[in-house]
Image (cartoon, rainbow, N blue to C red):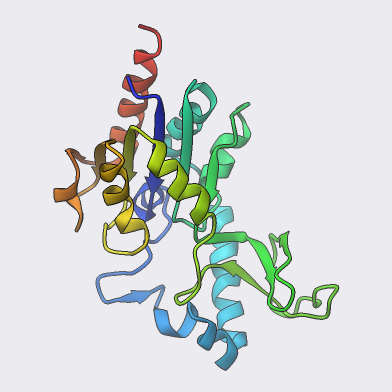
Length: 237
């Protein structure tokens, strides 16, 4: 039985809730080039466009709900007796909402930031945010508030904690990820070097499927609850 688990989630786990995946087949994100809405240079060049883009993404969260896969991982967080870190690349709040109704361990980190958070571009302070950022008052330091999102060219959050957990885990599970975006795409290699077992749960084979000891393909709402059930059942034996 595993003692320490690291779970990585990506856009595929939220797609069944109606959250669009990061890039569509045409390479665009919600009709925009990524370079126009997800880089520091884009914000400097056209802050109005960037703020409005993320305001729309933030507003859309009110129209979606956590699905069975989110709820299963929240249950794992609550009931798993060993070490656990759930790392999400998603900026939605579906993992958080699924966990809100449970007395879980809070063992979740957002490595790419959160839509429901604002970041001061000057002092780096963050604050919870649910409405539009367009036209918002500046931070107390006078700095402009921007989406608390890790854009291309910026360092993902919590990397020290994530890498330490990967080095100590004996099971790494990747759920709903493309296996093409670094540094997350390299997590399976870090886990393998630590001697961990590795499992991919994805709708289709990812770019990194060959790196995993086992891969199960199908909807996250089917695969994830079944896997969590099996893992928790082992603790009863």
